[in-house]
Length: 317
Ligand SMILES: Nc1nc2c(ncn2[C@@H]2O[C@H](COP(=O)(O)OP(=O)(O)OP(=O)(O)O)[C@@H](O)[C@H]2O)c(=O)[nH]1
Ligand SMILES: [Mg+2]
Ligand SMILES: [Zn+2]
Image (cartoon, rainbow, N blue to C red; front, side, top):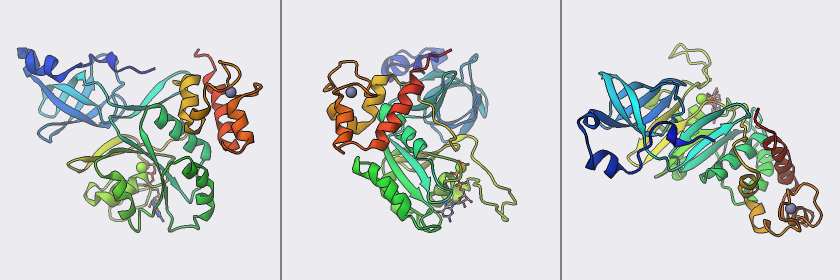
């Protein structure tokens, strides 16, 4: 599991930076990671300047949204020296590696579209990752101008019934319905490629001219898929992170216990199975399976849960 300690964490701003400033500390500048290109990071300094940064050694586990201190090496270049503790961290992982998606966010916006059709399994993985990270999810069904959205909304009813908000949208025609969700939040847009994440950013911030998969005659550009996470300021208290399209969303970093809690409708039944270590697969007197049989929990969700338990139960090798 990824820890913030791989780059020296700053435990409290007061003790580390303000009270005990050494001459070396004074050369450090505070900033925020606003773009993550793998080994290079775009960092926005307090004065608004954006510089290009590397980390020390082989450490490259910073995420878009991180608060850091930077040692300047040139006018527009620096080295990230310290990482402030994160209030949240969204990440995915398979058996081999972990990939951070965004940090310090308060909301995960899962962008789906009426066409091309979306994968419900990926939606579930995004919800589980958000719940496990303690970040509120919002589901957006985009491109409602293109196709009849009634089938998609029917499918999403299961998630609405769980208490998840579903916002139908046409980012191309009218972005207004999304605005109320973004106010005073730091949100990250996640989802499959082509769902319209970057189009949402452009609709909110036309001057940002984020490249999308649309062929633009004006920009003379071909189709463009997002390759790096990028943070945009919507206003003084609302930020939005655009991220590259997801093909998979591994959840190997979760324990079975975290997984069962991340299925929010399981929570009232946890601890009520006959066996303490019940995995809710086929054990007798399982409270979760009982709830499915009584139609209190959707069978679809139990099937996703079972699939994920097999995946995360695999050893790391
Ligand atoms: N009709 C319609 N098309 C849309 C809408 N939103 C996005 N699109 C189109 O969908 C295509 C993909 O949009 P992008 O914004 O690039 O999608 P993305 O989710 O950022 O894709 P990746 O960067 O690859 O992850 C583009 O051709 C957009 O013009 C919408 O509300 N209605
Ligand atoms: Mg994009
Ligand atoms: Zn059980």
